[in-house]
Image (cartoon, rainbow, N blue to C red):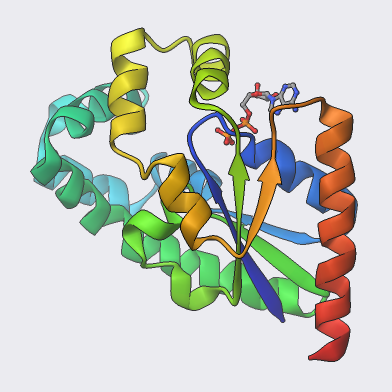
Length: 202
Ligand code: ADP
């Protein structure tokens, strides 16, 4: 099956784009959704988080205290490495399993990976890459509205990711998301046709 890696900066519109592709019938594997699942009990990843980081990173309901963890890893690179060591191999394994299931029913699938180029771990799964691109100002506005993040948290989040220019240099395809939802949907429709053609020529 053709597998496309979908990335983009925080708040660029990855989830929105993935939903639009799903409307065309593309299979979607979202690594953020998998990470959220692994952060809730029962989960071996959660047990390891407790061992590696301590009880204070487990919330009242038994899930990972994500805001606290985000605060830690945005200011501590080695903690970020430890968190990724717990989560990434498991996310990769589950993503592979989900792709395997989608093969039977879908022409192609997108794997949504926020740090596709930064981590590199997911690149072997995909044969093409797409980045969702918008201005940093727009990313900031969307992040402030959606997640209610402070300016400092947004600064840290953006500093932990590649720049627009780095993603643009690495991606095979670019979806611009500075306009309306309709303009976004038009670009997705065009790319969908391209991907369908690729599945036929393979
Ligand atoms: P990401 O998954 O990259 O973090 P999202 O898809 O969640 O980004 O988009 C961030 C926010 O911006 C969401 O609230 C989404 O509804 C909104 N959004 C994304 N693209 C557009 C657009 N073209 N027009 C209006 N709102 C948009």
